[in-house]
Structures are given as structure tokens and as C-alpha cells.
Length: 593
Image: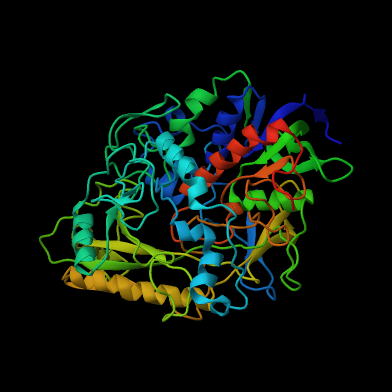
């Protein structure tokens, strides 16, 4: 039994990043008493993004000032079920956020909507290619919601964030200048696109010359002053090149701190408790209703927080681990294929192209912004006929000029020495006349890719670490090889001096030492069948109806896009159902199993 028991509240939120801020803001509007528990400390723009102190690349990009302390809690990783997992001791492949705002405080700001077919990929694949096209070990399933369901919530989230962009399809009518392949939108973006860099100008022209449809990607870096629906004002981006790994001192990058918290933290029916490490969701004797959560506070006390409604709003890995620690839902077993919690772990498979243009070009990479991107979707999702190629999925191909910082964003000319005067000369030669563009590829879910509790390693509180079992599969190697061929056509159209295409080769393994993306998905998937999903279409637990789970842990597979647009839309979709349906009959399932 906990040493301290708090007074009961209407809602307790576990984790306080994007989805926690959204749920807190919307539920307190109805007068509910909401308590948010965040494992890390308080973070805000004046204190954690103070100019000029925030522009410290060594502290933020190298030493990970805003990231989770892996000496206290981490994950263990292995490639297959036959291997013994080992701890992830240094941030490499993915970066775990920590503190108020979570990864939403130090992200880049890429805010895509998903292509409509991506939310119904199983149905789309079977209808177009037949069931036999799906590999035997692939766990392909629909989300349980459609683009039409989510469109109003995509729209509102963009307005909250002050997203900069250009619509390509409004109400089914193709609009020049935007993405002609996107799903129909109900409205234009809140702000016009960010300024195009010289590298993006070359990328746009080359992509068109190669037969593709480039567009300015949606960016949560404000292109102009903006006031969102909550009355919070954002300032215009100054293209300083310090977005990812940093808070924004200009109040230009959308984050919980710059879009929601100035209003939410002033509400008398909302309370935020930092340094509150939740260890389990408590349930009643029947195991069918949550009674609240137990957490460890900053002083080491074990505290019980009773609540009528429990909502997990932490990062994908943490949501999954907490469900496993709490014994809610059947853990997934890769041998039998039964169980759901921990199932559908997916990542992203990325590649890149580096282009060397003739001397006399000046790309000024230091004039960057996190989500200032030009993309095309011709090779994304199911926008092309996959039948000749034998794989499912695709990639968004894009050029992003995020900055030119000297430690992590400056690379010498390929073939240069790794140190000394030759390295310096190669760096000087490359800085102004080279740039890159990337392939951000989807990854499907597989029977042997999952999460479980590690039988050996524990965190600083004595609780089992989360164990990740994951490696690449043939479907994704085929996908990336085709994307590399596509990207090469774009590079050739630029008529460069040289170019270098980088894609993973079949048989290579997931290398956790090198950063790839923090876009991990699955573990508490949504769906229409309790046998293959943890949550119903409203993100409500099939097993415990007063428990909801938000975030990328609910995605059945991983898409080429960044996840924030979808996880925000799903949060607004879910909270609407909570307010308008669940609260009228608390404790009742919104979907019958």
C-alpha cells in the first residue's frame, strides 16, 4: 500500500507532452478536475530556452540536456527472440525526451497528415493486390478510423500549432502550389509556407523534372505572427537553425509550452506534478476498472492518486511498459502469436542522398528551420502500383534544411581524412556546396517484432526494463531499394558534380548506435478486434473501459511520415468521444467487443 494517498480526482494523466496537454486542456474545459503526472522536471521557454544560453550545441545535441537519463531507466534491445537483450546506455538510434513537453519541446516541428489509405492499409492492400500479397509474418491491420473521421481533428490541431503550409486539396478540388496527392482538406493552413532555401529550390526543380509533385511540407515553425484558438500567440521563425534538441527561444516552434500551457496552467481545476514516476495503473478486485495510479514522488515517497478516469499520455515505450507493469491486457507472445500488449513494434527505415554541386554554389545551411521541408509523396504509402515490386509501404522523399551547426551538422567532403588538416580542408570545401535529401520510409509490423518486460535488467526503482525485440525485414529492404532508385533520379536531374546514395543493404541489422528517428510505434495498438488490438477505435482499453491510451503506441504500423500530426488528431478524436459519449455513461465501453 502506498505511504501517501491523495484525494480522488476526475482524471489522472500519465506523462505530459503533446497528448497530455491536449487532454488536460480539453477535459478541464468541461469542469473536470485533472491531475497530470510527469516523470521529469518542469520545462518552459523562459527557463529552458533562454537566449543565448539555449544555443549550446555541446549541451543539447551532444550531451542530450533535454533527454531521459539512461542511467536511471532505459530499455534493453535485441534483434531476435533467440538473443539476450542488452541495455541501451547512450542515446543513438532514438532520443527519449524527458520533462514537461516531452519530445514535443525539442522536436523539429514536422506536422504531416497521413494519406487516407494509410489508415486502412490492410483493406486497401487486400482490395488492390489480394491477401497473398501480404507476407506471412506481417501483422497488417487497419487503424479502425478513417481519414474522414479524423479530418476535423487534423484541421483543429494544425490551427492550435499555427502550422505553416500550402493546401493541395480543399474539399476535393486540387489547389496549385500544394500537395495534389493529399487527402481532401476542409481549410487552408493557418499560415503560409516557410521561405524556401536554395537547396530546396534545386530539389523542387529536379523533382518536377523527374516527374514528381513536390510541395512545401507542413511545418510547426510559424512563418508569421499567429494567435491560435486557445488565445496563445506565436512569434515568427527567424531561421536560426536550432530546432531539434532545443526549445525555441523565439516562441515560434509549436510545442505544449508555446500553444497550450500558457492557458492550461492557469486553470484552477488543473494540477501538474513533476518528478512523479508512475509505476502502475491500479485496478479494482475485478480487474475491470482502473482506480487510479501509484507513483514515486521527488522525495522517494510512494503515492496513490485515485481517479475516475486514467489516461496514459506518455511516450510510446513508456505507455507500453506501464501497461505491462500493471498487468492490463494479455502480453504478446511471438511464439503462439497470442496476446496484444507489446505487439506491433515498428520503427522507420530511412535512406539519404548527398549532393555535391560545383564550386560557386552557396547553400548557407546555417539559415535553417526544423520543419522547413520540401517533399513529394509519389512514392509514399500506396500512391503507386506496388504489384511489380513485391513490397508494401513507401516513403516520403524530402529536402530539409534544419541548420548548419558546427559539431553535429557539418560533415567533410566524402573521401576526406577523418582528422587533421585534410579533414579541415574537406569540411571547408563541403560546407557551402553540398546538401542532402532523405527517404523516410514506412515499416510494417511483424510477428517477431515486439516489446516485453526484461527478465534481467531493472530500473533505479527495481522495476523491470522494457525489452525491445526488433530487426529489419525483406519487405523494407525492397522498399528502400526502390526509394533509392527514385531518389537517384532526382539527384541526377540536379546535374551535380557528384552524388552519393545511401540505403541499407539486405541482411544488415538495426544499428542502435546511429541516430535514425525517434518515431517508434506500436505496443498498445488501436483496432476493431480485441484479439489483435489493445484499444478500440476511440483509444479506450478493451479490458479496462475507464483507461484510455494516447500517442504513437496506438499505431498498428509505422508510416513514412513523422507521427505528430496523427497522434494529435487521434487525441482530439478520442477526447471528443470521452466528453460527448463516455462521460454520459462513465465506465461503459464505447465499442462493444
